[in-house]
Image: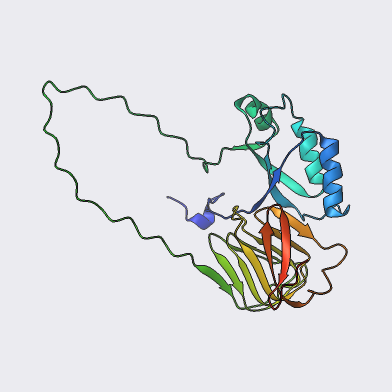
Length: 257
C-alpha cells in the first residue's frame, strides 16, 4: 500500500531560495578576503549564513586555475555559503563539482533541445499553405505587488518574487526584506532592504522613515557602519542605483547623500 506523503521518508517541494551573487574580478583568495573585510567592517557574521553563487564570468577566460576550496573557505569566513558557480568554462566543471558546488548556466536546469534532423524532401513539392491571419501581440502581464500589513521583526525575512514589495508597518533591526522589484515601506525601515534581487537595476527603495542597516539594488550594496546620513535619517527618502553607486534622495527636497 502506498504511504501518504506524511509517512514517506522524504518529500520534494518547490521552494524559493534567495542567493547573493558574489561577482569576482580576481581569483586571489587573499585579495577577496581583504575586500570582504573592508566591505563588512570586519564583522565575520555580516551575511548571516546567506547562500552565495560565485560568478566568475568576468575572469574565467583569463584565469587558468581557481582554488575553489580556499575560495569557498574565504566566503564561509563571512558566513556566505557557496552553493553554485556561474560563468565557469567547461574546463572548470570537474573541479567545481568535486568541491560539491553546482554549475549555474543561467537556464534554471533546462538544457537546450537538440535540433531535429531535416525531414526527407517529398517527391513532388507540396502546395504552399495559405497565409496565416496576423495575430495580435500578447498583452504584457501587469507587474503585481506583495503587500505586508504587519511589522517585519528581527530574524524574519520577506521575499517578493517577481514583483514589488509594499510594507505598511515597520521593518525592525535584524529583519530582511527582499524584492525582485522595488520596495516601499510606509513606515520605518531599520533592517536590511534588497531591491532588484533578480538584477533589475531600475528598482528603488522607498521609506517614510529611512534608517536601514544595509541596502542593495541589483546586487550593489551599501552599509552604514558610520551611521545613516544625518540630514536624511528617519525622514522620507528613496534609494536608487546610479551607475555602480547607490544614491539616497530625500522625497521632500533635492537632498542627496
